[in-house]
Image (cartoon, rainbow, N blue to C red; front, side, top):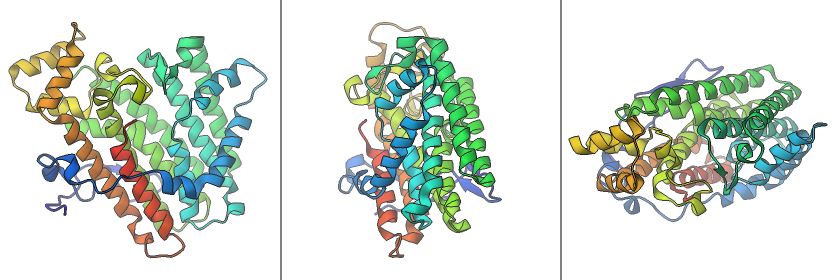
Length: 376
């Protein structure tokens, strides 16, 4: 049983809502996390399967719409975009829009606008991936060569711009000005989050709160906006819209923390990208912040030379991984992700007693826990 609960300290203002929604778990597991092995708090194996089963038919419609709307008279555009789309991915962001619509109890026939929004969300996400790979000079994404590696930076950036434009066309077609504003604001915050990440790059002494602020913007806000928009465009009550927004925000935080932990703990075949990319790119993530904070002078000098000054030597990645292991930085990061996952479960808990939404609430909780315990 998890005890010793602490209130959130950082807030993130949700679009179209006056109240601030916490990007920290409403009950923090931090004290518990620092001393408890992951295996001691994991019960069963969380899975996306229940949520996938519920959204399957709608996601088939989303995938068909993705293929239809990425077409262009310029052959390179669907070819390059299709390369990224065909690489797969979990499609968790568009699933949030569909889940939000289902939480609003919209029937399949009434979920047409949510299908458009889910497609828009996937295009926004794909556009940011194309741009990120150019910025990071990445050559591997989801186990395949990146678009910029195959077609060059100029083509990747321009096709990313095309997908952004298509996304806004789809949002307009959904015919809900409030939802359009919600997703437009999220798109701006994604860029702000990426810029904030640039400002902490190379600063191994970055505070945890600054890191959380970065990932809230660059990752979590799109999960949140997708879930809230799906509920809102489908006629959900303000309480359901706010709950789904909060759920998406907490899940997105868990997802990104786990992604950052995997960069040091999984191999390229498992992750679908090069292991240690974040280290080579001097990105500041929760595992390295923990290791810096707990490290001695020699360890901090190592992080300053590598992450701070980009002066890398042979076997530095292995040394970094050994230091992270010494301070249990990966397990502690996973446990922080688990705290956000549990907060996501709390957000949808009020709907677990309603027969119309009980299965969905349970599946969403399982999906959040999966996000915090995934291996790829």
